[in-house]
Image 1 (cartoon, rainbow, N blue to C red):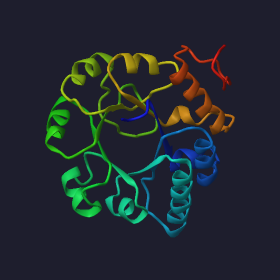
Image 2 (cartoon, rainbow, N blue to C red):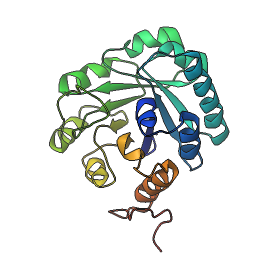
Image 3 (cartoon, helix red, strand yellow):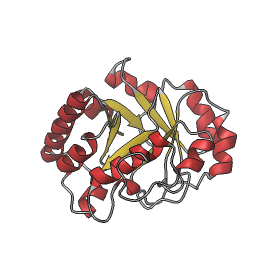
Length: 221
């Protein structure tokens, strides 16, 4: 079962905020996060692979599942889970690289893709963008909450909502049927303290207090 909170460590976003990738991962994993996706759209240079190996060790130590975005070969190299998009290998093709036991997620963006995903050996499906998003240029058309409610009935697999999800709108996304919310931009506050923001998200989703008070890291008494 997927946790409600699905943080995505996007290397480009971290870089724009002047944050080191390893330090950002450490801030996230200092809290009881159960899954972390490493999202890197560029080349996997030796430096990036060194960062990734270090983060893989952090995930093992904290008991979190590490998910590699797009790259089946890197997921196999690091012994990590894998998340695939529509332009990547299909889950059935990727399993020929990673092996049958690899935990795999698969992105969908509309009804046609969600129906087609039923034939793929994916452990969970993602749907989005639910709202407009700045973390992915030239993104697919916005799905919206009404369509999320409608499409939820098309699959019995865990469904991760992604795209423009913030602490302010996460409740509506979960109420519309998502099992989990993937968070990219709202993981990175302007002050740079990613750990504080993770704490806010965990308090929000665990306590059910809406909206969360900015900076609050303990559930209200």
